[in-house]
Every structure is written in structure tokens, then in C-alpha cells.
Amino acid sequence: MAGVPGVPSLPVLIVVSGPMGSGKTTLAHRIAGAVGCPAICRDEIKEGMVHATPGFAPEPGDELTMRTLPVFFRVLELLVSAGVTTVAEAAFQDKVWRPHLEPLRGLARIRIVHCMVAADVAFRRGLRRGEENPLRAAHADPAADGEERSVRAHQAFDRVSLEVPWMEVDTTDGYRPGLAEIVAFASRGI
Image (cartoon, rainbow, N blue to C red; front, side, top):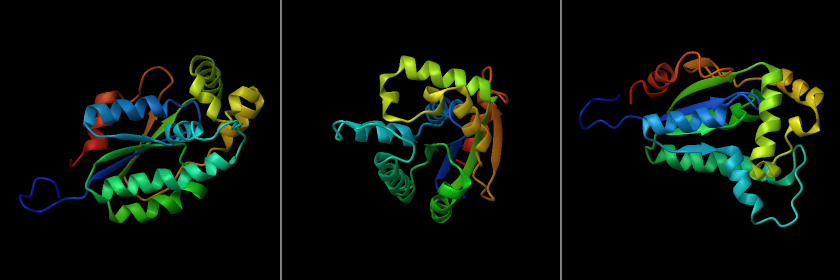
């Protein structure tokens, strides 16, 4: 464990999850900045892939989304295998993501920070980020198709369930609990 001279400890993999529009990317970057480690964001990987895919048009479950998943987990595996504490951010849903997180348990101490927000707040955030960030064109965001689809996606979100330490964070107006408490939870034992 941390603090024992000459005995290496496992890095921490801080998983920031939640439905679309729940504030996970912003929180992931804030945690990474406070802890002093990289933040690997699934959507940012896909946005980078779009540059090498002329004429790409996003759809739910599109080809780039399918290619992004293994790249995301290879990057995480590379980092934690090298002993790098890392923040991983994505809409980690149990059925899709747990099978990919399970193998990392032997390489890192996993902590989950689950972002929560009401569906209407998530919808408004999705609309705003789509208008403000042209890179969001890489994603088939439900908010772009209307509030009804966005609310259904929000309600259908099935959070990842690993038996690891976890914390819920309400991101409606700032963070509850506060950022200092979130960082203390995420970095415990580092």
C-alpha cells in the first residue's frame, strides 16, 4: 500500500460516470487537475478519431463509437499497468462497461464517482454544449433529437456496478459533496 518504502502500490483508477449531461467531463478534468494525473475521456478519443474519418455522420452505436471503446480501454490499461493513477470518464453503463473494467481491478485500485442530475437539467446542458462546442458533432447526443429522447436515455441509464468504493455527486449547481471531498475520496491512499 501507499507509504511503505520499497513496496510499489497499485495506482488508482478514478472512474467518473453518469448519464449524458451530468457534468462528468468537467468533473473528471477537475479531479485530474487536483490529483495530478491524466484524465482519459471516451468522447475526446472519439472526437480525435473523427479527424481521420472524412464525411463521418454520427448515429447511435455508429462505427466510430464501436472503435472508440477498445481504444479507450487499451489506453487505460497501458496507463495503470505503468503505475499511472488515472481518471477515466465515460457514460459507464453496467452491461457494456463492467466487463471492460473488471480486468483492470488487478492493475489498479478502482474508485467510482457517479454524477447525478435531473433529466431536464441534463437536456439543457446537452443543448448548450452542442451549440457551444463544434466538436460535439462527433456524437449522436439525444439532446439534439429533442427532450423526449434525452429524458428516455437519462432514465434508462444503468450505472456500472462493481464492488469498489463509490461516491454519488449531485452536479446540479456546483458539486454536492464539494470538490475537496470528492478529491479526498478519489485520491485516498495515493
